[in-house]
Amino acid sequence: GNPAVKSAEEARGWDGGIGTINNETFAIAHWHLVTSNLVLLVPHLPDEELAYLADVVMTNLLLRETWEVGQDPENSLSIPTLCESLLKSTLLPEMQPLHQAILLALLERVKGLISIPVLSVPTRLLEQLGDSSDASQGGGNQKGSISELLVSHPTPSQRSSLLVAQDALSVKSPSFCTLSEQQLDLLLRSLDILSALRLDSLSCTDHLHCFLLLVSLVTAVKPSSEKTKAFKCLQALSKCYTLLTILQTGANAD
Image 1 (spheres, rainbow, N blue to C red):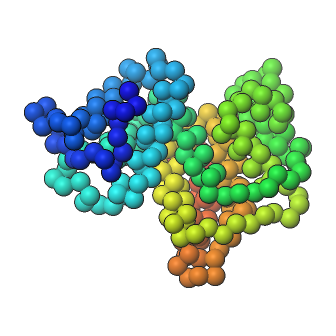
Image 2: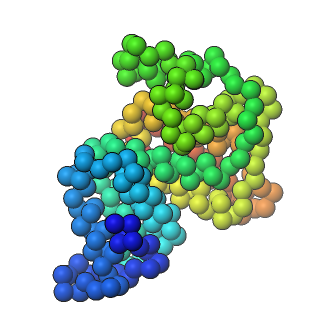
Image 3: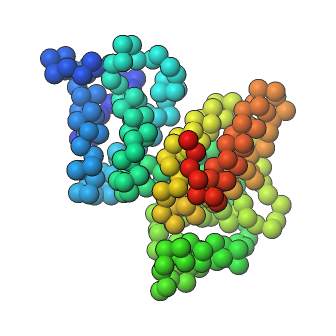
């Protein structure tokens, strides 16, 4: 259940031995058991459970400790390292429902970093993108309009992402936002995670969903005048353009 899996700040390292399971390491042992059997579990999990799993993965992957070398002494297991192993697993793209849930959870976190007011809708351009998405799926009975995309994929994450894309692709003057250094660090880690999610394995709808949010980022994020923040912002924009190239070419990053 939910209380069994704690964050990395609450659970200590576990050496993998049954005899060392106690109150402090139980959460890690529990998460190890779950992640080791996801191939069997995912086909039978409801959307709520998949969303919870994705939230646990994203919460731990975005912790700074996950991306620092040597945090876990003597190769002991922790929830962040188990989540990172799941992220790098070649089996994750094969577990499409979980892969999608993790992607949407990540994009939801990224969307929280930027704020763009709702402007006019570039209907023709969004319809063209929708038509391309449906055509690649072979969906002859779908018209691919923006309204139908919102109806057929009504999750809050997809609705808000499409609205953000409408603003980013609007012919009106774009709105800019300047991120703090902490927000930039979070964005950089988020983009690294997104790169590891094997974007060449996305469904057509998720491909469009990811593409539009990346476009929103490169049009909304404005570099700061401070040298450190400006450098990190340019790093983030470079990563965004790299990911957009991956989405357009279908060649995943190594």
